[in-house]
Amino acid sequence: MSQEIAPGGRPAYRPSEKDGRIVEMLAGWSMQQDRIAQVLGIDPKTVRKHYRHALDAGAAKLEAQLAHNLLRIAQGKDRQALIATIFALKSRFGWIEAAPEPKPRPLGKKEAARLAAENPGRGSSWGDLLKPPPPPPPPGAYCDRMGH
Image 1 (tube, rainbow, N blue to C red):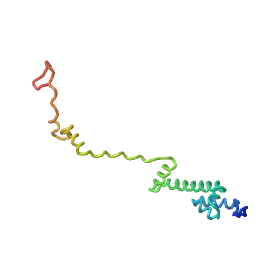
Image 2 (cartoon, rainbow, N blue to C red):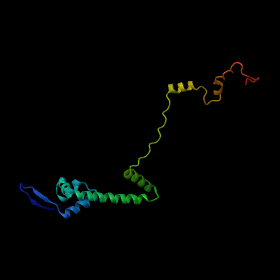
Image 3 (tube, one colour):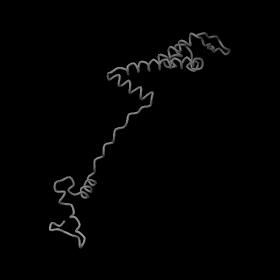
Image 4 (cartoon, helix red, strand yellow):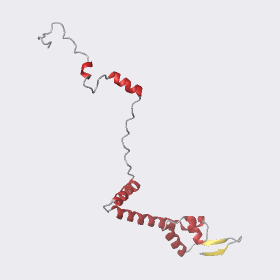
């Protein structure tokens, strides 16, 4: 941290290579920018202004480490491997879980009564007795004694 007094009494910040390495390291540890600024003794806006590249590089290195670890775990054969694989597929490749088929809603009393009236005896042993008889043969059609 090298600073000199600027006109008006406020110290002007001069970025340094050392501070840049510190910012990248702390960003790589997922430290928040306001905390990084506190470590350097400067304002968070100053951190973003002078060290945008270091912040991005640290975040990219962290992401790479996490992805590497996740993929290493995903190559296993246990439950954690399955969870890691599913997470990687969802977060990196946009996979989504299919929603289960919705359960049919139960019939209300009136709807059940209406269906029962429209289909009397359906699914019961006496249902055939409720079927209407076949139509009579047209006049002049041949019939045997059995009515066929």
